Image (cartoon, rainbow, N blue to C red; front, top):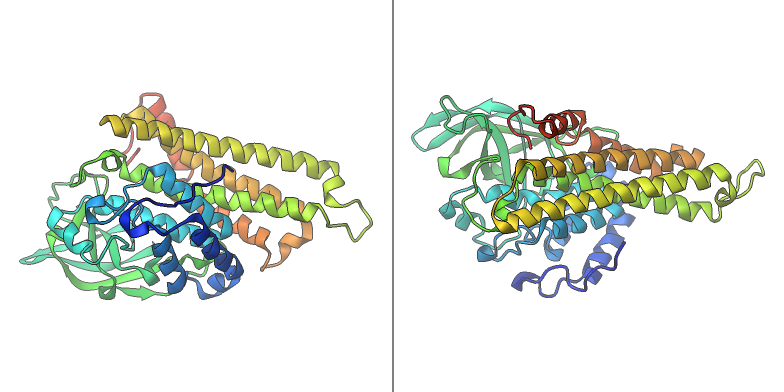
Length: 388
């Protein structure tokens, strides 16, 4: 990887945040990976560390003290965190939530950022739950699974439906303070165990209409980052987690191969032909997927800078994101296979990488269905609502 710049961000609130600060945080994250898995969440002090290094202000508007970083800048930050731990990277990826919040009315945004730009948004969109209109807005009830990062969030967003909603096929999101939501701890899974992706339960919460937004709808704010497609950006923020995990897996195998001898008397791993072959394949797969990912990101960003984003470029971005997630998972499978019995233990970094990367690739925005949607778009066929 290229050497990172000295400063992570350049805004007023982050003037002292450097890559050295991030490196210190990553040392702590690496040392506590097993703890995150057991707790089924990323703890408050780590989320506060994300605030300090600019994860949550990165995509917030400059007028509210944010950074308005480029999508590639944000993804590189998430990628590096993911190299330390997949669950931590996944939770950090939700720093892209500032892009979703940009669809709220201006007056609401001023309230959101009244205390600064480091606002943590979590939540879950599906299944959309019916909400009822009332004099003060909407009465929201329901249960939503997969609310990653919800235990330490400031705001929670959930997907709702309304009769005769003018948003049409695009889902509406109701945003509310986290204290109005009950978290049902049930995140008992094989991968990304530390993401706190529990169910969230909402009971008779009144959400004013001005605290709702249309996911994928036009933003209130203007600027290149707000012309960059929100749904595609969310997909790529998740996908880059898989690339970071895979990088760590390859590095772990290389470090192991230099010294690990077989109990049967075989040569050290680095001298075995099949290890040499497979590690070369894995390295090529990872670098190819990563290059496609950032190439597509930069092409889409160029269009956002010019003021017009087209379907073809956005489709390639979605394709690159899905490819990154899938290739990352395959690289981790190869790496764990090369590790042999070392990867059988539940506290093995390579076992964790394989399971974490598998879960990344299972996300609805990164699974086989997105490949089909991308293919339809590339062939000029009709595409489903919400894609790209």
